[in-house]
Length: 375
Image (cartoon, rainbow, N blue to C red; front, top):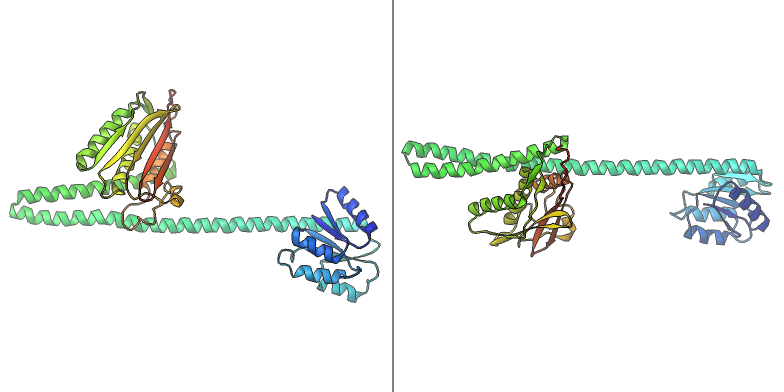
């Protein structure tokens, strides 16, 4: 918007009409005081300012405007009927003006100057936008780089822990074998096997995230019974966690089209977290049902819960809840992988949680009678 400041109504009207004919948005002020009030309320690209005015003259108005942080970069063109001496022109520039035009005004020249200032303004605005975008991109890259470094550090620690344990158990095995202590050998073998399984799971997650990043995570989709899958998973978990009860609620009486192994991977991840982040509790619920043409599966625990502000981020890559990062080990990629698996099935993941009351992680997948691509 352009602000024209002139104490002569005829000048205001004529200038306003000419500029509006050329599609410029124009505002007017008939005194320096009125101009300052408008500058405080509105943003102007250009101010065309008469020098000779009663009260505050144009130079005083320009100096006052330059003191406003909001308007100090606004371009000002001075108009003057009598002050054509170099000292007045010099004062105009020193007061903050970018140009000085004498009256009577040549409208063609004024229009050219206005268009030039507008072009400079647009270029400057676009440059600022580009700079802001670049700064935002740099900040995003910094955050991503920090997350990657943190992830590498965590991954190194998580991988080193089972490796160190296996190495220790192998050393103990050597001593027990030499002594012929078979019961101790079996006990150490079992513990080493558990650590190797943990190591295998960590490596599998790392491979999955690599495949997701490269677009090579493949799916073998077919029709299968979700209830059978859930019953098998629950049975396995109950065997390995006999003191923890998993209660299934509802059923899914129709077949689901998808990759059974990948869907099982998601449910196992949800159940593992339900046990891991609910120390001291004895049960978790699995809800399985069809809702509006979609399969719904939710895993509910009664553990520590997640703060509302962090719930939107739990499915992001490398995210770990700050309050639990030290207490509970993990790479922070299990939920990210689970979310990607469900999204590749055309579904959605989510979480409902309250601090101190537990969480329900869930996913929905459409019942699709028409097989789609497995990629």
